[in-house]
Length: 97
Image 1: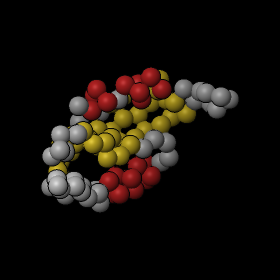
Image 2: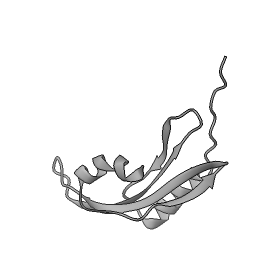
Image 3: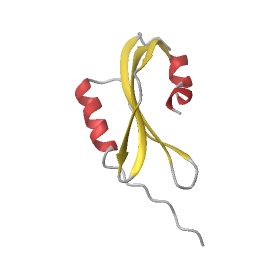
């Protein structure tokens, strides 16, 4: 699931690397998580720069695929903070009529 969802990242980054995905639970919902890194291609006068990030995905009870978080740039400390915020997510699916 994650591998198919990284197409846009692959187009925007040189030397794209996707680490093997892992599975875990957040608030009772099973997620797949993968870290990635690459070099952001230069655009509009901005130089190329090294970026890294993480992506969490799950299939929700209503059948939709949810992407809970994606980050790039910054430091590894920034990435740790993003992951801490992702782990605080709570899924709310509206009940039917």
